[in-house]
Image: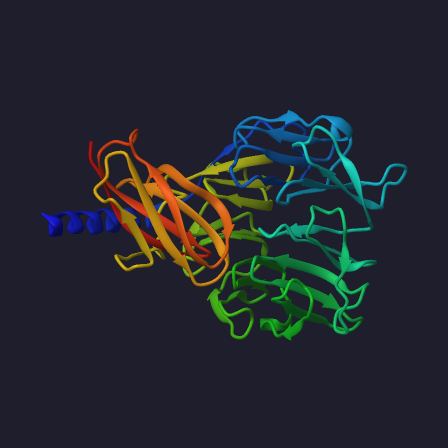
Amino acid sequence: MKHIGTLFFALALLILHTALEAQTLVWTKTDLPNTDQVYGWHCAPNGLIAFACSGKALYQSSDSGKSWLPSGGMFATRPAYFVIRSNHAWMVGSDVPGTTDVMGLYRSLDNGVTWDSCGWIGTSGVQSNSKGLFVGGGWVDGISRSTDDGFHWTACKSPAISPGQIMDMVVTDSMIVAKTFDGTSMQYWISTNLASSWKQIQVPQGNWDARCAWGSTIIIATNTGLFRTLDQGESWKQISADSGVTKLAMRRDIVLMAMRDKQVKVSFDRGASWTPANSGLADTVADDFAIDDGQVFVSLHGEGLYRGGIDGLSAVHSSDRTTESAMIQITPNPVSTHATVSYSLAADADVQVDLIDALGRVVATVLPQTYQSAGMHYLPIEVAQIPAGILACRVRIGTSSVVGKLVVTH
Protein backbone atom coordinates (compact mmCIF):
# COMPACT_ATOMS: atom_id res chain seq x y z
CA MET A 1 0.00 0.00 0.00
CA LYS A 2 2.88 2.35 0.79
CA HIS A 3 4.35 1.79 -2.70
CA ILE A 4 0.95 2.41 -4.32
CA GLY A 5 0.61 5.73 -2.48
CA THR A 6 4.10 6.79 -3.51
CA LEU A 7 3.40 5.79 -7.13
CA PHE A 8 0.13 7.76 -7.12
CA PHE A 9 1.90 10.83 -5.72
CA ALA A 10 4.66 10.69 -8.35
CA LEU A 11 2.10 10.15 -11.14
CA ALA A 12 0.04 13.12 -9.94
CA LEU A 13 3.09 15.37 -9.99
CA LEU A 14 4.02 14.15 -13.49
CA ILE A 15 0.53 14.92 -14.80
CA LEU A 16 0.67 18.32 -13.11
CA HIS A 17 4.04 19.15 -14.68
CA THR A 18 2.82 18.15 -18.14
CA ALA A 19 -0.31 20.28 -17.81
CA LEU A 20 1.68 23.30 -16.68
CA GLU A 21 4.07 23.04 -19.61
CA ALA A 22 1.12 23.28 -22.02
CA GLN A 23 -0.45 26.30 -20.35
CA THR A 24 0.02 29.94 -21.11
CA LEU A 25 -1.20 33.22 -19.69
CA VAL A 26 -4.69 34.57 -20.35
CA TRP A 27 -5.13 38.31 -19.77
CA THR A 28 -8.06 40.39 -18.52
CA LYS A 29 -8.14 44.19 -18.59
CA THR A 30 -8.42 45.80 -15.15
CA ASP A 31 -10.61 48.79 -14.35
CA LEU A 32 -7.64 51.00 -13.43
CA PRO A 33 -8.66 54.58 -14.42
CA ASN A 34 -6.50 56.99 -16.42
CA THR A 35 -4.66 54.10 -17.99
CA ASP A 36 -3.35 55.99 -20.98
CA GLN A 37 -0.09 56.26 -19.02
CA VAL A 38 0.70 53.46 -16.55
CA TYR A 39 4.23 54.02 -15.33
CA GLY A 40 4.63 51.19 -12.84
CA TRP A 41 3.10 49.17 -10.04
CA HIS A 42 4.07 46.87 -7.23
CA CYS A 43 2.33 44.21 -5.13
CA ALA A 44 2.93 43.38 -1.50
CA PRO A 45 4.21 39.83 -0.85
CA ASN A 46 0.79 38.67 0.37
CA GLY A 47 -0.99 40.17 -2.65
CA LEU A 48 -3.46 42.11 -0.49
CA ILE A 49 -2.23 45.61 -1.26
CA ALA A 50 -1.10 46.85 -4.64
CA PHE A 51 -0.35 50.30 -6.04
CA ALA A 52 -0.32 51.45 -9.66
CA CYS A 53 0.99 54.73 -11.02
CA SER A 54 -0.73 56.59 -13.83
CA GLY A 55 0.00 59.94 -15.38
CA LYS A 56 -2.53 61.62 -13.08
CA ALA A 57 -2.63 59.83 -9.71
CA LEU A 58 -1.65 56.84 -7.60
CA TYR A 59 -4.22 54.04 -7.36
CA GLN A 60 -4.61 51.33 -4.75
CA SER A 61 -6.07 47.80 -4.87
CA SER A 62 -6.92 45.51 -1.98
CA ASP A 63 -8.02 42.53 -4.09
CA SER A 64 -4.85 41.66 -6.01
CA GLY A 65 -5.52 44.17 -8.78
CA LYS A 66 -9.09 43.24 -9.67
CA SER A 67 -10.42 46.67 -8.72
CA TRP A 68 -8.75 50.03 -8.05
CA LEU A 69 -9.43 53.22 -6.09
CA PRO A 70 -7.43 56.47 -5.94
CA SER A 71 -4.90 56.53 -3.13
CA GLY A 72 -5.47 59.27 -0.58
CA GLY A 73 -3.19 62.02 0.59
CA MET A 74 -0.75 63.87 -1.62
CA PHE A 75 -1.05 61.35 -4.48
CA ALA A 76 -4.80 61.67 -4.96
CA THR A 77 -4.27 64.10 -7.83
CA ARG A 78 -0.55 64.21 -8.57
CA PRO A 79 1.46 61.94 -10.87
CA ALA A 80 3.60 59.07 -9.62
CA TYR A 81 6.29 57.51 -11.79
CA PHE A 82 7.33 54.37 -9.91
CA VAL A 83 6.29 52.54 -6.77
CA ILE A 84 8.09 49.86 -4.77
CA ARG A 85 7.73 48.02 -1.47
CA SER A 86 10.27 47.55 1.31
CA ASN A 87 9.83 45.56 4.51
CA HIS A 88 7.55 48.13 6.15
CA ALA A 89 7.08 51.00 3.70
CA TRP A 90 5.85 51.95 0.25
CA MET A 91 8.12 54.20 -1.85
CA VAL A 92 6.87 56.40 -4.70
CA GLY A 93 8.80 58.59 -7.11
CA SER A 94 7.13 61.88 -8.05
CA ASP A 95 7.89 65.45 -9.04
CA VAL A 96 9.26 67.64 -6.30
CA PRO A 97 6.63 70.34 -5.52
CA GLY A 98 7.23 73.44 -7.61
CA THR A 99 9.19 71.53 -10.29
CA THR A 100 8.34 69.47 -13.36
CA ASP A 101 11.64 67.73 -14.04
CA VAL A 102 13.14 66.93 -10.61
CA MET A 103 12.28 63.54 -9.11
CA GLY A 104 11.76 63.08 -5.37
CA LEU A 105 11.24 59.97 -3.27
CA TYR A 106 8.25 59.71 -0.92
CA ARG A 107 7.43 57.09 1.74
CA SER A 108 4.26 55.71 3.35
CA LEU A 109 4.25 53.49 6.45
CA ASP A 110 0.43 53.14 6.58
CA ASN A 111 -0.44 51.67 3.17
CA GLY A 112 -0.78 55.01 1.43
CA VAL A 113 -2.82 56.98 3.94
CA THR A 114 -0.01 59.47 4.62
CA TRP A 115 3.26 60.20 2.83
CA ASP A 116 6.49 61.96 3.76
CA SER A 117 9.61 62.91 1.82
CA CYS A 118 12.68 60.71 2.14
CA GLY A 119 14.90 63.68 1.35
CA TRP A 120 16.22 61.87 -1.70
CA ILE A 121 16.15 64.20 -4.70
CA GLY A 122 17.26 63.45 -8.25
CA THR A 123 16.72 59.70 -8.23
CA SER A 124 15.94 57.89 -11.47
CA GLY A 125 14.73 54.72 -9.74
CA VAL A 126 14.71 52.66 -6.54
CA GLN A 127 14.74 48.90 -6.13
CA SER A 128 14.56 46.61 -3.12
CA ASN A 129 15.14 43.05 -2.02
CA SER A 130 13.84 41.01 0.89
CA LYS A 131 16.48 42.44 3.22
CA GLY A 132 14.77 45.82 2.91
CA LEU A 133 17.63 47.29 0.90
CA PHE A 134 16.89 50.17 -1.45
CA VAL A 135 19.35 51.15 -4.13
CA GLY A 136 18.85 54.46 -5.92
CA GLY A 137 20.49 55.03 -9.29
CA GLY A 138 20.78 58.36 -11.02
CA TRP A 139 23.04 60.52 -13.14
CA VAL A 140 23.75 62.87 -10.25
CA ASP A 141 23.89 60.79 -7.09
CA GLY A 142 25.20 57.39 -8.17
CA ILE A 143 24.11 54.40 -6.07
CA SER A 144 23.08 54.60 -2.42
CA ARG A 145 21.54 52.07 -0.06
CA SER A 146 19.22 52.09 2.92
CA THR A 147 18.40 49.31 5.37
CA ASP A 148 15.73 51.18 7.35
CA ASP A 149 12.94 51.93 4.85
CA GLY A 150 14.68 54.98 3.44
CA PHE A 151 15.20 56.94 6.66
CA HIS A 152 18.98 56.88 6.23
CA TRP A 153 21.07 56.44 3.09
CA THR A 154 24.70 55.46 2.59
CA ALA A 155 26.56 56.26 -0.63
CA CYS A 156 28.13 53.17 -2.21
CA LYS A 157 31.57 54.54 -2.98
CA SER A 158 33.68 52.60 -5.44
CA PRO A 159 36.64 53.55 -7.62
CA ALA A 160 34.97 51.65 -10.46
CA ILE A 161 31.50 53.19 -10.20
CA SER A 162 31.43 56.93 -9.66
CA PRO A 163 28.43 59.29 -9.48
CA GLY A 164 27.16 60.44 -12.83
CA GLN A 165 27.67 57.13 -14.65
CA ILE A 166 24.71 54.96 -13.60
CA MET A 167 22.53 54.00 -16.58
CA ASP A 168 20.58 51.02 -15.23
CA MET A 169 20.56 48.49 -12.40
CA VAL A 170 18.80 45.34 -11.24
CA VAL A 171 18.63 44.01 -7.67
CA THR A 172 18.04 40.52 -6.27
CA ASP A 173 18.70 38.98 -2.85
CA SER A 174 22.00 37.62 -4.17
CA MET A 175 23.40 40.52 -6.15
CA ILE A 176 23.19 44.03 -7.57
CA VAL A 177 24.06 44.50 -11.25
CA ALA A 178 24.80 48.00 -12.57
CA LYS A 179 25.17 49.34 -16.10
CA THR A 180 27.43 52.39 -16.40
CA PHE A 181 28.68 54.71 -19.14
CA ASP A 182 32.18 56.17 -18.98
CA GLY A 183 31.68 58.63 -21.81
CA THR A 184 32.85 56.15 -24.43
CA SER A 185 31.33 52.72 -23.80
CA MET A 186 28.94 50.79 -21.58
CA GLN A 187 30.38 48.83 -18.68
CA TYR A 188 28.77 46.24 -16.41
CA TRP A 189 29.39 45.61 -12.72
CA ILE A 190 28.16 43.17 -10.09
CA SER A 191 28.15 43.31 -6.30
CA THR A 192 27.38 40.36 -4.05
CA ASN A 193 27.90 42.20 -0.74
CA LEU A 194 25.18 44.88 -0.67
CA ALA A 195 27.07 47.26 -2.96
CA SER A 196 30.14 47.49 -0.70
CA SER A 197 32.43 46.37 -3.53
CA TRP A 198 32.04 45.70 -7.25
CA LYS A 199 33.49 43.42 -9.92
CA GLN A 200 33.34 44.15 -13.64
CA ILE A 201 31.65 41.51 -15.82
CA GLN A 202 31.35 41.05 -19.57
CA VAL A 203 27.98 40.69 -21.26
CA PRO A 204 27.26 39.26 -24.74
CA GLN A 205 27.33 41.85 -27.54
CA GLY A 206 28.63 44.42 -25.05
CA ASN A 207 25.21 45.84 -24.26
CA TRP A 208 21.72 44.92 -23.11
CA ASP A 209 18.42 46.33 -24.35
CA ALA A 210 16.43 44.79 -21.50
CA ARG A 211 17.26 42.70 -18.45
CA CYS A 212 15.77 40.75 -15.57
CA ALA A 213 17.19 38.74 -12.70
CA TRP A 214 16.25 36.42 -9.85
CA GLY A 215 18.68 34.92 -7.35
CA SER A 216 21.96 34.35 -9.20
CA THR A 217 20.29 34.20 -12.63
CA ILE A 218 20.49 37.12 -15.07
CA ILE A 219 18.74 37.22 -18.47
CA ILE A 220 19.57 39.97 -20.95
CA ALA A 221 18.17 40.94 -24.36
CA THR A 222 20.61 41.94 -27.11
CA ASN A 223 20.25 42.65 -30.82
CA THR A 224 21.02 38.98 -31.55
CA GLY A 225 18.76 37.34 -28.96
CA LEU A 226 18.46 36.45 -25.28
CA PHE A 227 21.37 35.29 -23.15
CA ARG A 228 21.32 33.82 -19.63
CA THR A 229 23.89 33.38 -16.89
CA LEU A 230 23.32 31.12 -13.88
CA ASP A 231 26.60 32.05 -12.18
CA GLN A 232 26.36 35.83 -11.73
CA GLY A 233 27.92 36.71 -15.05
CA GLU A 234 30.84 34.28 -15.14
CA SER A 235 29.49 32.48 -18.23
CA TRP A 236 26.62 33.11 -20.66
CA LYS A 237 24.44 30.90 -22.86
CA GLN A 238 22.09 32.00 -25.64
CA ILE A 239 18.54 30.83 -24.85
CA SER A 240 16.57 32.51 -27.63
CA ALA A 241 17.16 34.08 -31.04
CA ASP A 242 14.32 36.61 -30.49
CA SER A 243 15.46 40.16 -31.24
CA GLY A 244 13.62 43.42 -30.73
CA VAL A 245 12.95 42.64 -27.06
CA THR A 246 11.98 45.78 -25.14
CA LYS A 247 11.14 44.47 -21.67
CA LEU A 248 11.90 41.44 -19.48
CA ALA A 249 10.54 40.47 -16.06
CA MET A 250 11.35 37.45 -13.91
CA ARG A 251 10.17 35.82 -10.69
CA ARG A 252 11.57 32.43 -9.74
CA ASP A 253 11.18 30.26 -12.88
CA ILE A 254 8.67 32.52 -14.66
CA VAL A 255 10.00 35.01 -17.25
CA LEU A 256 7.99 37.43 -19.39
CA MET A 257 9.20 39.04 -22.64
CA ALA A 258 7.78 41.99 -24.61
CA MET A 259 8.86 42.72 -28.20
CA ARG A 260 8.64 45.67 -30.60
CA ASP A 261 6.39 43.68 -32.93
CA LYS A 262 3.73 43.55 -30.14
CA GLN A 263 4.44 39.93 -29.19
CA VAL A 264 4.38 38.83 -25.56
CA LYS A 265 5.96 35.52 -24.57
CA VAL A 266 6.19 33.61 -21.30
CA SER A 267 8.66 31.01 -20.02
CA PHE A 268 8.10 28.71 -17.05
CA ASP A 269 11.66 27.34 -16.97
CA ARG A 270 13.86 30.45 -16.58
CA GLY A 271 13.97 31.10 -20.32
CA ALA A 272 14.80 27.63 -21.62
CA SER A 273 11.55 27.49 -23.62
CA TRP A 274 8.96 30.11 -24.59
CA THR A 275 5.21 30.21 -25.30
CA PRO A 276 3.22 33.02 -26.99
CA ALA A 277 1.09 34.89 -24.42
CA ASN A 278 -0.96 37.50 -26.30
CA SER A 279 -4.37 35.96 -25.60
CA GLY A 280 -6.72 38.68 -24.36
CA LEU A 281 -4.32 41.59 -24.97
CA ALA A 282 -5.01 44.59 -27.21
CA ASP A 283 -2.92 44.79 -30.38
CA THR A 284 -0.26 47.18 -29.12
CA VAL A 285 3.20 47.19 -27.57
CA ALA A 286 3.64 46.08 -23.95
CA ASP A 287 5.39 48.74 -21.87
CA ASP A 288 6.13 46.87 -18.66
CA PHE A 289 5.47 43.74 -16.54
CA ALA A 290 5.10 42.88 -12.88
CA ILE A 291 5.13 39.31 -11.53
CA ASP A 292 4.11 38.25 -8.05
CA ASP A 293 3.15 34.85 -6.66
CA GLY A 294 -0.27 34.11 -8.14
CA GLN A 295 -0.62 37.27 -10.22
CA VAL A 296 0.97 38.86 -13.29
CA PHE A 297 0.41 42.34 -14.71
CA VAL A 298 1.26 43.99 -18.03
CA SER A 299 0.72 47.59 -19.10
CA LEU A 300 -0.02 48.18 -22.79
CA HIS A 301 0.90 51.42 -24.47
CA GLY A 302 -2.22 53.60 -24.46
CA GLU A 303 -4.45 50.66 -23.48
CA GLY A 304 -4.08 50.32 -19.73
CA LEU A 305 -3.27 47.61 -17.22
CA TYR A 306 -4.02 43.92 -17.76
CA ARG A 307 -4.00 41.14 -15.16
CA GLY A 308 -2.85 37.67 -16.15
CA GLY A 309 -4.04 34.37 -14.78
CA ILE A 310 -2.88 30.79 -15.11
CA ASP A 311 -4.07 27.72 -13.24
CA GLY A 312 -1.30 26.61 -10.95
CA LEU A 313 0.85 29.75 -11.33
CA SER A 314 1.97 29.23 -7.72
CA ALA A 315 1.98 25.45 -8.03
CA VAL A 316 4.80 22.98 -8.54
CA HIS A 317 6.83 23.85 -11.68
CA SER A 318 8.91 21.51 -13.77
CA SER A 319 12.13 22.50 -12.00
CA ASP A 320 10.81 21.32 -8.64
CA ARG A 321 11.94 17.98 -7.35
CA THR A 322 10.48 15.36 -5.03
CA THR A 323 12.55 14.04 -2.19
CA GLU A 324 12.18 11.88 0.88
CA SER A 325 15.55 13.01 2.25
CA ALA A 326 16.16 14.62 5.62
CA MET A 327 16.02 18.07 3.97
CA ILE A 328 12.26 18.05 4.60
CA GLN A 329 10.42 15.95 7.18
CA ILE A 330 6.74 15.93 8.13
CA THR A 331 5.57 14.40 11.40
CA PRO A 332 3.20 12.79 12.05
CA ASN A 333 2.42 11.54 8.55
CA PRO A 334 -0.40 10.53 7.87
CA VAL A 335 -2.05 13.33 9.85
CA SER A 336 -5.65 14.27 10.70
CA THR A 337 -5.28 17.59 12.57
CA HIS A 338 -1.80 18.94 13.34
CA ALA A 339 1.65 18.19 11.93
CA THR A 340 5.09 19.79 11.81
CA VAL A 341 7.27 20.28 8.75
CA SER A 342 11.00 20.67 9.35
CA TYR A 343 13.74 21.59 6.89
CA SER A 344 17.34 22.74 6.93
CA LEU A 345 18.77 25.76 5.10
CA ALA A 346 22.41 25.68 4.09
CA ALA A 347 22.41 29.49 3.78
CA ASP A 348 20.08 32.47 4.35
CA ALA A 349 17.30 32.41 1.75
CA ASP A 350 13.76 33.35 0.77
CA VAL A 351 11.44 30.53 1.89
CA GLN A 352 7.78 29.83 1.18
CA VAL A 353 5.85 26.69 2.17
CA ASP A 354 2.62 25.62 0.42
CA LEU A 355 0.32 22.60 0.43
CA ILE A 356 -0.72 21.59 -3.10
CA ASP A 357 -3.32 19.08 -4.25
CA ALA A 358 -2.99 16.67 -7.20
CA LEU A 359 -4.48 19.26 -9.59
CA GLY A 360 -1.76 21.76 -8.78
CA ARG A 361 -3.92 24.03 -6.64
CA VAL A 362 -2.47 25.68 -3.55
CA VAL A 363 -4.88 24.63 -0.80
CA ALA A 364 -2.95 26.28 2.04
CA THR A 365 0.08 28.51 2.49
CA VAL A 366 1.89 27.37 5.62
CA LEU A 367 4.52 30.13 5.36
CA PRO A 368 4.26 33.19 3.07
CA GLN A 369 7.51 34.23 1.44
CA THR A 370 9.88 35.02 4.32
CA TYR A 371 13.62 35.60 4.51
CA GLN A 372 15.05 33.00 6.90
CA SER A 373 18.52 32.39 8.29
CA ALA A 374 20.58 29.24 7.78
CA GLY A 375 19.84 26.26 10.03
CA MET A 376 16.87 24.11 11.04
CA HIS A 377 13.33 25.45 10.90
CA TYR A 378 10.07 23.96 12.21
CA LEU A 379 6.59 25.01 11.09
CA PRO A 380 3.18 23.84 12.35
CA ILE A 381 0.66 22.60 9.76
CA GLU A 382 -3.10 22.69 10.35
CA VAL A 383 -5.05 20.24 8.16
CA ALA A 384 -8.34 19.87 10.04
CA GLN A 385 -10.18 21.90 7.37
CA ILE A 386 -8.40 20.32 4.39
CA PRO A 387 -10.10 17.39 2.59
CA ALA A 388 -8.51 13.97 3.03
CA GLY A 389 -6.07 12.90 0.36
CA ILE A 390 -2.44 13.06 -0.73
CA LEU A 391 -0.88 16.53 -0.89
CA ALA A 392 2.48 17.91 -1.91
CA CYS A 393 4.21 19.98 0.76
CA ARG A 394 6.41 22.31 -1.28
CA VAL A 395 9.23 24.22 0.39
CA ARG A 396 10.56 26.93 -1.94
CA ILE A 397 14.15 27.83 -1.08
CA GLY A 398 15.41 30.67 -3.24
CA THR A 399 14.85 29.64 -6.86
CA SER A 400 14.53 25.89 -6.22
CA SER A 401 12.01 23.75 -4.38
CA VAL A 402 11.86 20.60 -2.31
CA VAL A 403 8.61 18.60 -2.25
CA GLY A 404 7.49 16.07 0.34
CA LYS A 405 4.39 13.89 0.50
CA LEU A 406 1.70 14.63 3.11
CA VAL A 407 -1.18 12.20 3.63
CA VAL A 408 -4.29 13.78 5.22
CA THR A 409 -6.83 11.48 6.90
CA HIS A 410 -10.01 12.32 8.81
